Length: 451
Figure (cartoon, rainbow, N blue to C red):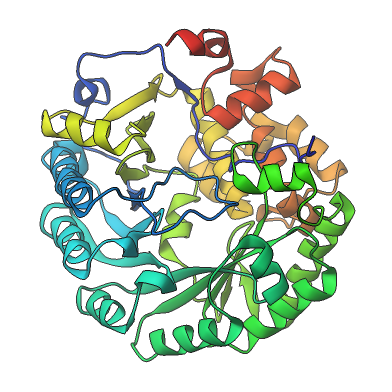
């Protein structure tokens, strides 16, 4: 049995948790989308493309290899229809949308014209204000023609998952392309004046040493990139890598203390080389922060999300879309929001809890902004939790705000989960972890099989 390294192995960001037992006849009415928003906060939009040219054996996200060009055409058409279902509501039209992130999956599995269609649909129908637009790319299907097309369409950020430069580790992960080819691709992208080029790394890989990890970081420092994300590898039982680790056909995962050392070393190296912390996993150069991550984790306002299996938060309700692309397409073609499940309307207590947990995902929470929004000092509401986290050296008080320490950023999921207390009063730690992982309220877990 493979042991997990931290308390929470999924991103702790969806709150309030959803209740699959809620089945409103009309989701638009349930979320009261016919009302105008009075919220002053800017809003991000996430677009999920659940397709990939190949499935990485460590990937935990909802994705599939498209069975035909037709399914991609149908998905893009459905996605545009879903955008319009929301765009025609008074609530969404009263928003201020400043950032768009097209992720997956692999968005560049779509053609240049399909990606342009999606971007045009967003621009033509949503209340955008010169937004940052990010597209996740894979070298396998993002050649220079497609990169040029994305720039012409108004994309401002390009992001790609490098994971590691080590050929030994890339072989274990069965990843294509060499260090030389990756660097050549990044340099090609930099020929176009995107605001930001970002890469993702994984650490804690099978058989990975600290020196190999440090070498990845040193190579990254030489590249013309503006943003670096570092994610600890999490291995779930349904991915291919899990069975290989169980069978002993690949090296073991590093021990917990080794993985923590990798994170600490990365934090030091990046800070020493003029990168600053944007979130628990995100670092940016020259204060070139991603607007999408700033808005997603600011702790206030809505997070709009479109596409199969995407998660969003709108007007006090968390929602998750249908996972299967064919079911998603069918529901949208009926003229209905393709929602799988929603939360109860957020309560005042949960609203404050949501602010705390999301803000610590970003790694800090400003005291004055919290007070201005809610008319209470956060110590009045969460003083006991804040003291406990300070005693564990997970957070510190710098006077104006509470910030995560480097150790606290490594255990950010556990920090954020602490603030879900109105949901998890008298709930066992195991049940709490399962509920957070499944994004559903704990009292629905026993009924999940029958829903």
